[in-house]
Image (cartoon, rainbow, N blue to C red; front, side):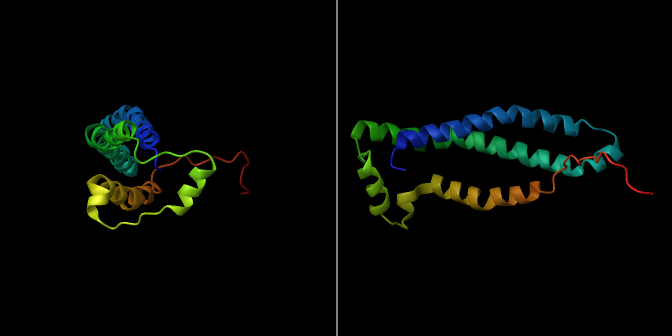
Length: 150
């Protein structure tokens, strides 16, 4: 996307979304570790691990967004684009043609930077492993209303 302002707004919304989940994740973490009954704790082992993973991810993502990504990348780039007017933002048909025809392929680290490397590493590896792990998380088993034959 060439509009860095729209991208900064999107990234801000993602960070706000995780910030809104963070207190819930920390409350759940506190609750799951407050269980002292060893049998109950053993049965809820996956819930405990899932809660740790979700809380850790929320803390990491919120910290990354607040202290690095939003101020140093997203909003800095958006403000620079507003001040300089570069790259030029087109609208209408020319914007569609521009999106499909102007490609500047680069494999240089300096063109992408640490933030992009971190995001890609997290999104395409760590988050995939978290998603696979959470597939094992506890879930409600639906009860059937009919009785089974004896």
